[in-house]
Length: 227
Image (cartoon, rainbow, N blue to C red; front, top):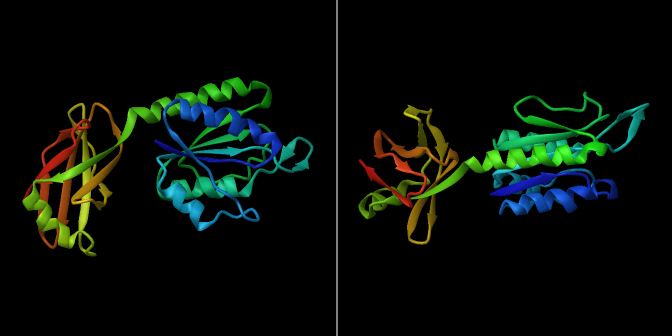
């Protein structure tokens, strides 16, 4: 997985790069972070968030504004908001004493952080990483060749639509939009946040015509379309 970590770039937050980065990598994941220019996130940072699987945002203390009340890093909140707009999974780690009004709309989960109880925070982050690993991204190659030849000329057309559906414990979940990506000589579809024991189906539509696959396991390398 590719995990974006939003945090302050200062000595007080050095524990994030020293400990959290190591924790993420211990799960076999890639760590991504963003260079902030004048407290503003760049389009490059936004693109890095959009291509990540999840985000950890550390709203730690920055400037004291009252007795026991602190501001946080504006760009961290902006990066969390960007993740929610994609959307990808996002968890905010909010330090005790950070102004609760310096927040964003709901839709994300939160971990409370106290400097004296850093170990508890790291355990909670590990629990989220474990949970995220239970829901994986699956990349499937479209098959057979004759269906690929039909879809290739139209997969970038405005009317072209591609979806995937997850079947879990006998229940069919709602269709989720995705896209078709050419890689080498093939066409591929990515299904995000799929439980490891689930089945996945691909549905493609274009100008009244449809192509539908059977359900495949997350261990499959391709899906065979009928249409």
